[in-house]
Length: 429
Image (tube, rainbow, N blue to C red):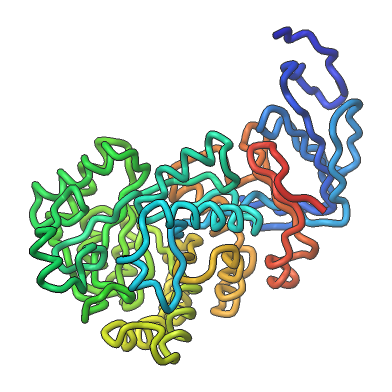
């Protein structure tokens, strides 16, 4: 294929694009600078081959022969990242029984729809923290077989026996004896050696990130939602082995002691953090540990706990107690300087409604600009990538546009009018 092509708009210092490129000029009325947290005036984004080639101030740069997208009455932002989703499922009153009735393929078909809803809501990347579907869905999206966000997949979560993410919790004796106790292959560990094996198994299965359940959980069929479930040595073994493969480690944690052990063990992020205390906050600041509060999940489970029959009775009191505390904890963590990034735990709540998390963050006292940074530059740092989260030359052309200015009215995040991922337009006015 020939590379010969007329170089257009020399005044803009554009390089000649390859013949197969589909260059696009995106004219924005305003543009959110994720690095500074400030809203800028009109700009034009020049996109070639999935990357932003140039950002031109003024928003009126006409490039002959390029596809033009007119968003002059819209606000452009980097595509958002949700760092905590579960695309293979979505909570309902039937969720617990469905685990015995549905096959993996059923969850996979559901996940296709959930992925597209997430993308159309403005989330061009997600970190899927637990589920056997997610690595396969990641590959299908990357191959262009289905529409969805860029997926960083954890695969199976790593738990301890009886802990949150032990897949046999709540099974009767007959089933338990028939299947036998789960081990590292299934993500259940009880020693340092088990911990290393479980990480290596996730590598074998194609995971991108490791997720551990450092404490009990709200929705698992078990009594405790906050008891610690790993030793520090086990966490360290997981983190050290994960680093061998270039993985980062996310730790689900509600209880204080479990969080402390996870932070001391070297995890990248704490998810939920319900009972986080001053000591844990101090350790997180010292070690640079990120906090992903998941406001949405806390509110959702607290609301559903009030409905008879929605959760099993062993789950209901945890949902009512823990869910209601997340907002208070996250607000305190922000005031104390803990670094916060964006995650919803969608799959608990409905997919496609992820942006409501911004509203909950602002209601808790987190500035709108910081909330938007949490889903852009902060999220990229948590993922360990440097090619997304900002609208700058050389970065991925992940661009979304809102009808209104979220710095003036955070509710504008619920009205996404334009979505581009890797230079491909998926939604436009």
